[in-house]
Image 1 (cartoon, rainbow, N blue to C red):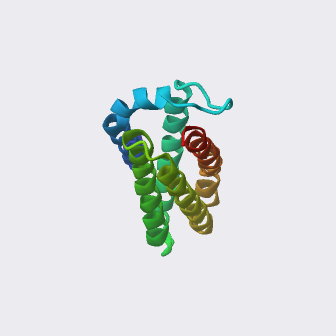
Image 2: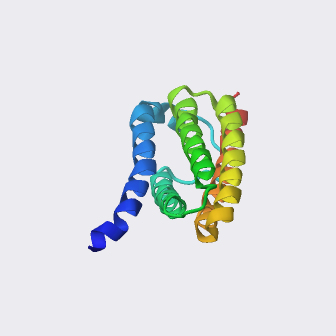
Image 3: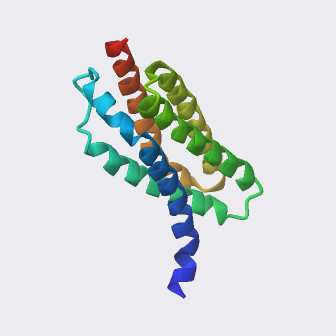
Length: 156
């Protein structure tokens, strides 16, 4: 009985974790190249990134499940924005780590920040807690944009 209550959350959490896992798998060969690049002094250790992203993906899944379970007619649009930002998130990794296109990845992050902000706004109209759970993601994306741009600038 308890599993039935949590099943939508488990499914919803699995989706962003799978997207993140697939993008990490596809781009892992690009890590040695990234490690050789000049980085700004505020770059976190590599071990921090999978921890942060796992937390953010879990929060994404919880938020999406909350919105999905609502009866609000706006949920379809909000979940489309959620899916779109998740796709952009995926392609950012491919651009940055896989293709070493740091400037294009910076632009991609600007799009991602816009989409995450839109998602938060749309989620807030449906479930304020779901929206608030995405604030760390927005903050991290802003930090990632500064970091990404700095890596491009230092290695151009």
